[in-house]
Length: 84
Image 1 (cartoon, helix red, strand yellow):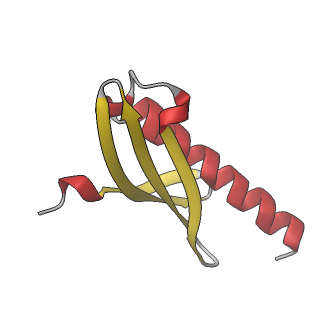
Image 2 (cartoon, rainbow, N blue to C red):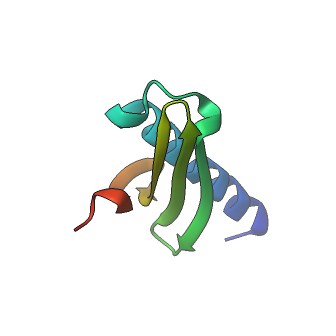
């Protein structure tokens, strides 16, 4: 995989995960875009795991987790704040 393809794939995975957290997770839908941060994590041949966090003060929201993307779609989602 070339560096350019790697950057594009990672950028796409970051966007997909960000949008999933912001639009699909009910607790975060009403928060502004700035509340959601994403950064690359584990990258292999088939998937990219993105780490995310949500921090906002009105209302106070703190959460973190990861999502795994495969072929441009979220295939796994984990919210660490909901784990026992």
